[in-house]
Image (cartoon, rainbow, N blue to C red; front, side, top):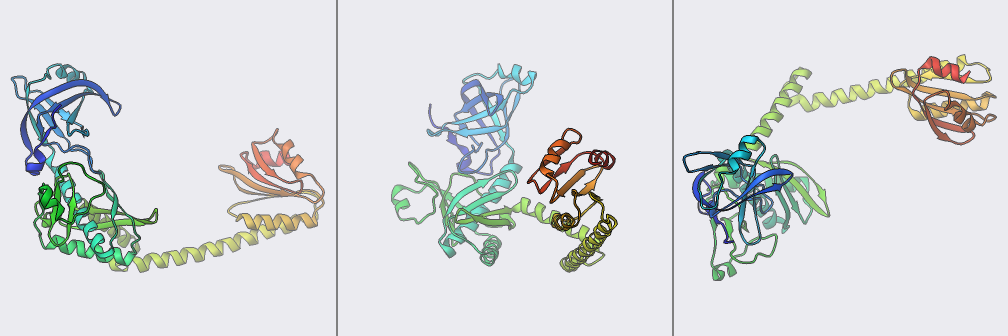
Length: 404
């Protein structure tokens, strides 16, 4: 089958087109019952080069005026582009029978979605071009999803370097530089220095942003960098010896920043401070919270010591407590084992959530004792003859009865 004519290469801003059906078949695709349609030409950009496919509609041009939603578009190694129309309703399934080879159709892409991708993809070119020119790192991975743009570089970038690159990328946006997309001849291509993630066979489409980046790319792009609006780094991390970085551009970046501002306003309102003092206010809360936690730990330790003193010289010791640190309980059981001839057990928790526990003894085989308790309690435990620990799902009263 002949390669599909890529109308999006000719005009990335055109939304409607007329075409002829070359092939139609009912198939299962990505777990959906679909009509797979190949047209002689299309404005729909397929999933390719790390970018997801355009969405939109295909309508029959005859008297029926039937319209089908396009949920995915794919391209094969021969350049044939297939549009997938979901047959998710009886109406769609029935209408599918009207699709025939040779029929004329009208296609229309979702341009709002297309433009979001154009903003973000061109923004990625700017950012990656600057990374390459400043640091020499290659963009070895790219994914433009529904929410974020992910880029993987084969070299490490520091926080300061990323901030500097982000600033330079936005300066390129402010300059409103024309973006040129073209297919150079073989002779012209041989004289062009351009970035490419892989070896390309056949015609190479070049996207050039003068003074910023030149890269091989198959996707639609904005006409000028000013249309991107803003480029914002969302997060980054070390990844496989390099750097994985996430950005947002254009409308997506605006929505993200607006959301962050709303959160800052909520925090400011809760702290009863101006937004510019939010960090200091939160730091103060952390300090006060940690101080209160320390005081609470000491108070609980004192309460546990009081319970231990109440045990006196009894043979066995059973203590219920709550909110204690495990190391505190272990130290307490070790101490009780030295002064009591039977077993000592401290249970930490409550009736609703159950109790974690540590049991110890110098004279009683607590491991065997714990195994016997499993017939009476919802108990899981492990350890040695001298000390076991685990969890009991019963309430305090049932545990006391079982231990008596």
